[in-house]
Length: 426
Image (cartoon, rainbow, N blue to C red; front, side, top):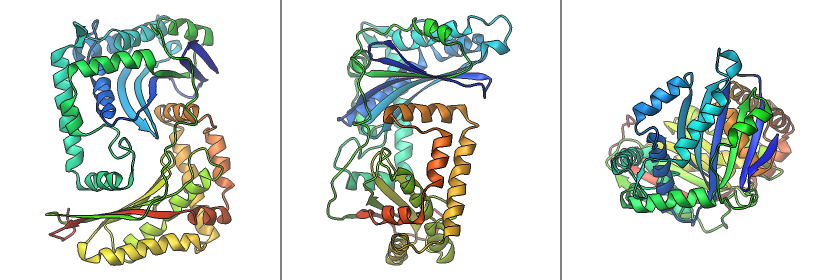
């Protein structure tokens, strides 16, 4: 059930009796073109989660959540293709399972309204202590990610391949950008978010529609833009280029070899699920070519895996290898891609992979947050991503369709983080 709460504020209500809790996500959505916005929105999510005018610290928020029968709350800042989503995520027990909790829905929305629209501010700036503390925490976290060598290799190949500044970086932004964000800039970004972001409210649970509509009226939205479709803006596409290569040497024990292939099939394409199956066959499963032939049989890699980003039209291959076996590993990896292009896989292998993919989706049905996030993405794409539809689509993937997908793979980038010491323990 979909309806417009206010101009620019869409509600998607999924009536679900599977769980004893209600899941709610309020997503502020915008297309971003400046990489510094990644840091701003990540920091903004963190600051808004930490306090509000009515609940001035984490202790006060914790007490309120306990009063709301053990409700849970958090924020996330994500990048989906070209879009940035700043999410307020809330979960509470369905009132019908509690005594004297008929106003729990109203009180839950009232809590979210305080968090979103009434932050702890002085003179139109966020509380300085909250701002500095959350900024320091996030800078430490980001630097920790960058110190991880597998993450470093991933960042380097993204910087090498992507031409768009936003796509080059992590969804959180860089430590340098965090350091440069001022309280004034963040406060301005907050006001812009309230005034110009599109909003999607996704609610899942066994609620009465009229009661939900009434409770949501408390949210103080004012002046949002008219509702627009993000379906045509969501997926990032990049033109094919000459292969880009980069090598760095560091005093580490295990070298990292990462590759990017362009695969011009996005999440709205008819061949999307064939691409999902192709990736699982290549390196997205313990049954895959990379795992069996590169990691296990040839013992060329400590790990060898692939991931398909349908919102960026790429396949990323990540491996951990010995530096003196780079060329051997490279040739064997490319040979696995060629095997799929020429159909060197059996119908039995294909069947196993499809069963594995369906089982993964079946397991996701037991996690309400997975279902909520899936619904948000489905809304953005304006396409069906229900469990039933995905299973049917995966079952329909044929060997011929996988071969067709494989032959659209174009090698685009290679990054090698070469270790000076190499005994495989890093």
